[in-house]
Length: 398
Image (cartoon, rainbow, N blue to C red; front, side, top):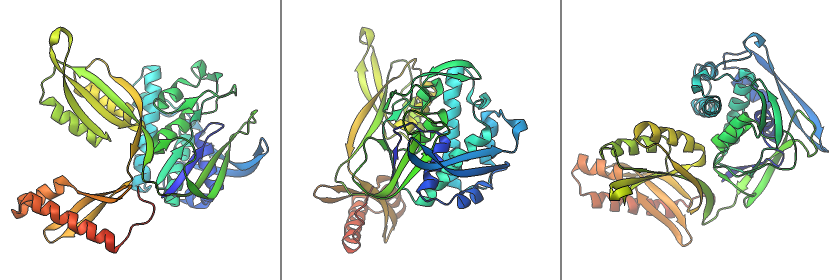
């Protein structure tokens, strides 16, 4: 599994993230060529600098549209939406920018679309975020792992006045992500860096078992007591029978909503990235019957799923807490039966592979072909098992 490890021992910002990927070996010319598809005018200056004795790449975005320095979030997102960037890069970039705008909106009591990107030029933000996702695409990255995030401490001067560190938007974005202040009195992690970490990281923790092929250092703009660089490792993560990660559990008790609404709510939550959604009958105050709604969410999706719960239910509050999980590596593959294609989930257990045909695919064929459902499921399982024996998978399976 092609894995990228973000070692942010001195924090993370958008420009440091992109610079580390360039230092790793992603060609800046290629990234620039793709970024020219954005309807903005800019250049990127690259140089080698030393921070605390470590040589790294420093990237500086030069905005040629200085008269539009403070853009609304909606305008910045529109720049990306109206571009001809690759569709997956476009979607990932817009998701990160929306997360950044939501966090700023929560802090300042404004609608996300009307938020200004005051501290950074809208051009800086777009280039850092879109460039990072272009670089990840170039590398063919399958998994992104990140160390706990140091935020720094103290205060910072902003257009809103003096704010505490970590900046309110940064701490909002890092909700549910392992973090610590560190020993440096300075802003180590910026809102853009936090938005990127939240959007692209699959799990957090120490360096996984991997064969490192390339190392990149992205330099920050200041000299700090610690080396102000972001280190990124890239290579092959060794196959494991059990993987580790962290999710967020969202819970709320509801006793005043018609039960039919839960069907629609479940569909929306799954569409937005929920890993699981379930309800449990409970007895509430004065023995009123109610429902405990539980949603298991990836860390980067929890804010959006909370928003949907508040919009689509009658609840006034949501509990959230981080949980550790162990899970089996798995892939979704397609097998071709003589009735039609069926997706099959292949998971790797300590004793070999397990195959689970996708129920909805089997159900659709059973209804269309008037074949017993169990017969279709058995055939899909047989073909998947046979195919796996004839074409053994790579060691890296996710």
